[in-house]
Amino acid sequence: MPLSRFSRLPDSRFYHEASSTELFARAGKAIPGGVNSPVRAFRSVGGSPFFVRRAEGAYLHTVDGRTLIDYVCTWGPAIHGHRPDSVVAAVKAAAEKGLSFGTPHPGEVEMAERLLAAVPSMSKVRLCNSGTEATMSTIRLARGVSGRNRIIKFAGCYHGHVDSLLIKAGSGALTLGSPDSAGIPPGLARETLVLPFNNLSLLEEAFGRFGDELAAVILEPIPANAGLILPDPDFLPALRRLCSDHRVILIFDEVMTGFRLAPGGAQELLGVRPDMSALGKIIGGGLPVGAFGGEASTMDHLAPLGNVYQAGTLSGNPLAVAAGLASIKLLADDPPYDRLDAMGRLLASTLLDAARRKGLPLQVPQIGSMFCLFFTDRPVRNLEDATASTTELYKKFFHACLGHGIYLPPSPFETCFISSAHEGEPIEQTAEIFASVIRAL
Ligand code: KE4
Image 1 (tube, rainbow, N blue to C red):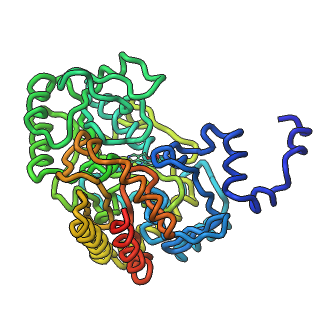
Image 2: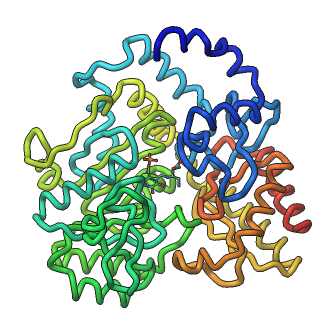
Image 3: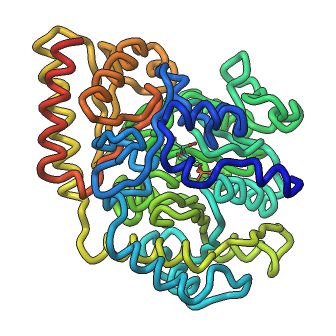
């Protein structure tokens, strides 16, 4: 951009004094959809997004002077609430030593060892910069190690914007996938088979038909990107057995559930051991970090040891690692999981009691600090059930809560997150507001 165009831009103060409406209008001219990630644009719930000036504890403070109790928690990372003192201090201290070295540094070794200690199914791990990079790398590694191309994913599971994983189910139950986004070659899409979650018979049929062609199966062990869907008790153990029998690499995408449900994520909670895991969100403490790991015999196929290439300029960045280490140390020093689950149960029971009194069909799947609302009268076991729920009621609930100062995910197919900073007044206020909003729906 020639200097003259820089000089025509408003003074930086403009950006920090403008309203959400003014900022969103300008953003739309400079950023596609006015956002740097689609879900933030409120298109699934209607209306326009607010802009945030700062965040602290359970609260977002908007540029329009509003204070909101936040149940998005930056889509998972903020398990301690926003701006935890020890994480901020760690980032400040790291910044004093430099912002990026492009060489190994001590924090990377500590981070790797702490991740391996928390997730025993991994004996080697590599850091990257996002959940997408992590899952993308697990797929490439699984294909490189096995020499096979085909993979299985499950409808409703989201693994980041990876070409091989932005795939929707084929027309028939076992027909190979088709692109779920423009720009993905159909030939690549056909290497991905998309199955319904929690459907054991189709899973067994798919292994019977494709088992020896499969490089990997990837899934969110507890899907949370179609709303929150809890696995049937026998589903993951059966999947584990099928993968072992057919020598197929089982990949758990724990980008969301890792350190959220337990330090070792869903695999620790449910007792099912994958061959590889993808991590992200909480392990960056709010800064960009992803990670993927597995047995050394698999991981050592990665460059520079092996012939599967994977790299990143800012992988292991010292500030991001400092934030991530501080965040996971807080979890180790004072595990919040029982308290988070108690808050989750309080909100779920409050919502269900209010809906029952009103005769409103509502499901509130909840596990630990994760919950969502499906306005439907039957349990949601897969994406089809989720999309059959009444999204119009979710939109009404979302905007009514926002009007009362509670920010929920701006989509019926996301998951709410509770942080340890929600304890006390925020969670109690939320329960009261949830009950009154349900009554008024
Ligand atoms: P990122 O590339 O956004 O760091 O991670 C991708 C990803 C991978 N795996 C799981 C299970 C995920 O939930 C995600 C990202 N989650 C979404 C929220 N549903 C991020 C929000 C967004 O896309 O803006």
